[in-house]
Image (cartoon, rainbow over the protein chains, first blue to last red):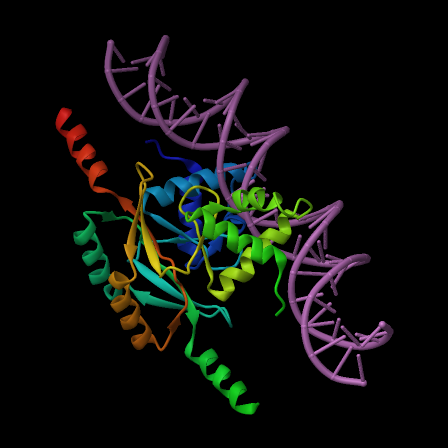
Length: 134
Length: 134
DNA sequence: ACGTATAATGCAAATCTTTGCATATGCAAA
DNA sequence: TTTGCATATGCAAAGATTTGCATTATACGT
């Protein structure tokens, strides 16, 4: 597999931003250096990087996939469906679960970025409060 | 919230099929009874059902979201990235993991359909075989 | 250095999904 | 029944993502 300049640009962009970027944001960033680059090229490069396990892609419920560099360790996210707050959890809290699944099913898990939707503690309290107010 | 006829039709379709359907498949099915129904109406009805927790939506890596009825118990899936085989695992294998995450983070998990990508046992063997052949 | 196979890219079209706005519909109170 | 309100729907446009095909660039063996 040969080195792609678009892949390089993507990796540098993601490592500079250190956050979740949409494909459009990645595209806009890259245009600075590679003005002629095409959207579909960015999509395909991102797809390759995800397959290689260098980058994660997730649907955070924002109606647009977000990409993130995975070099500094695997991690996962809890996304609040009410306030959209995103919390990060370390891979150590997921590791043993993954191991159990792998052993039981003879299945080698590749997924490296789990997104769990739910209600954060703040919003849980708000629900209780609004109930009490009635 | 009032009962929507499209929601009804979706629920009946999903319960009849008992499998993962794309929004297009749902749309086609429903057209039999409600010929004038619009795609976006189906999308919105599916969205509501997902929010209500009656239906799950997942990206199985097929480039089109698939929907499934959740009435007969929560379950989750392992998807092989090589052969696209889909395995089902029960919620009992996930429950304790969810509980631990919930307690540690004071976060109430709503996610009811986990998709884990990886390599199934067959494809693992194939990789080993092709290595040996070289 | 040369030729070839493989992979990356651009472009345009197709597909999938969301959204804004106007309209229609069902439900509950008057 | 009628009225008012919230929700569901249709329609069209926009946005997001994928794909087929032709072209270009790169790596690798010779």
